Image (cartoon, rainbow, N blue to C red; front, side):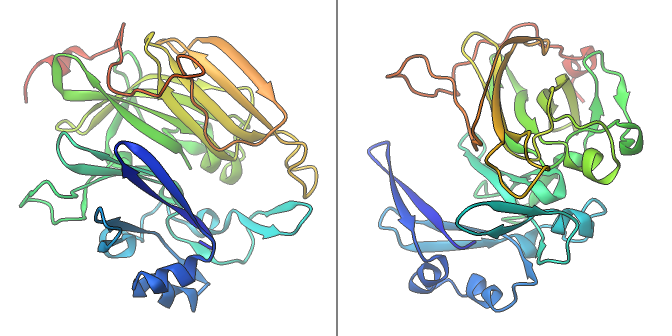
Length: 327
């Protein structure tokens, strides 16, 4: 990373401070590990920094110490599939190049106060991890994964098992963005997760149709199972960026980050962004496309509204009958 932001919270309002010189800021914060990596640009991975209310660094979580970096999905094509060569006029995307290995490329993390654990979306692992953060668990060491979502058994809406076969366009999700979880009233053993599936692995490695997907699924951690409410193919392939959220009316909202005009030249000037609202069956009820490339999108109640992930009225959930029987 060469630039970034520190986000702190004071009286529930975020205060965003731009970090202009990332490595110098790490040095000022006395974080030695990323600085060591600055001397080894051929390989890099992610860290999570925890600060106290006075902005004092209290913990450094290093992904290489806690996540298996030898996963089968983590092939060189995934590390190197995207390298940005920046100039003042354009951004050139270079695929399958001999460039530095991006071992993780995490793009989302969030803390769940219910069980005091943390979720992290690791794009170049094609997966979402749940980490033991400060739950006090003696079973899983602090900072280690409680689960790797790609190790779950996946099912369609009718509870038919899905066997991954990317060469025949059968997959779960890949190079995803913005997983978000939502409570289900009356059930503390399962929850809903939405995410935007960029679908890079089937498209870019196996030559499958150029589509990204909007996904909503039910998660049962104890059973290590995930049921797709829907995995909706979008009209375009968005190789990067994207977001997801559930709405108060029970529908879901997705942003397809950057597509079209991307592979014809070195400029992103022709790229577009699309937004979609879908019902619980994955049917598109609203969509729009604009000439832009956006990273995230939100649907607000009004111009003066706010995003609220807590009170979602889910309807027509395809909960398998087997999930109603305790293990």
